[in-house]
Image (cartoon, rainbow, N blue to C red):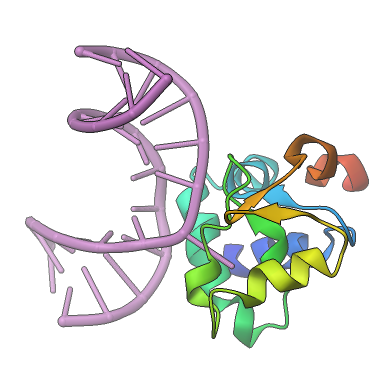
Length: 105
DNA sequence: GGTCTGACTAAAT
DNA sequence: GATTTAGCCAGAC
């Protein structure tokens, strides 16, 4: 079980209509760095993971460029009632989700 | 095996 | 308050 799978596993647990950040996942898994999360999520497409629900700490869709098209990420989020403006999540604080909120570690 | 890079972040300028 | 620096650590070369 690599840390990559840990990251992907937590990402799968993100509730529909909610998002989380690289830092939150890194903090929950004590990876040591949010960069590890971003790096791990590169492999999301080969692991059937909703990577579009993971954004940076400002609520920006920083990873949109890694999808087939930069618009996929935004459209997927909007389909979950998450409003996007200029690649940033509106009302980010309201939809933010931290792993401990559900996992209660 | 040293260096560079990266879907990041917090702290220091 | 915008920009830069430093820490993070696993791959690619």
